[in-house]
Image (cartoon, rainbow, N blue to C red; front, side):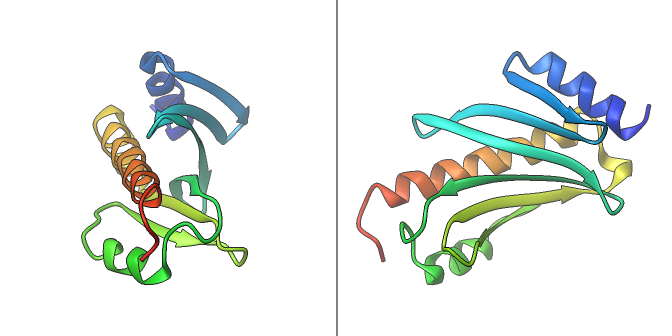
Length: 124
């Protein structure tokens, strides 16, 4: 089974709102900390990439994001030049299957939830 077929099969079995955007791109919407998290999934440059905007600008300090990145696996925080916080990660093609897709997306949603819950408190 190819990467696109594996992603299609995985998303169809999730029971969450998902869509195929193009031949090698998908969208998935799940709940994270009480509001929708829109995840983009794309097959690019030999990797399956997943990313989502977790927070708008100036909600969590850059220092905290760097500190939290040290404890993450498969995924990491980044921010845009405007300061929006993204969570993203990649899988090589040999790992694209239900177990690793579930792990990647689960960790991505968990990291977005942590950031959103942290942003509900005072900015450090």
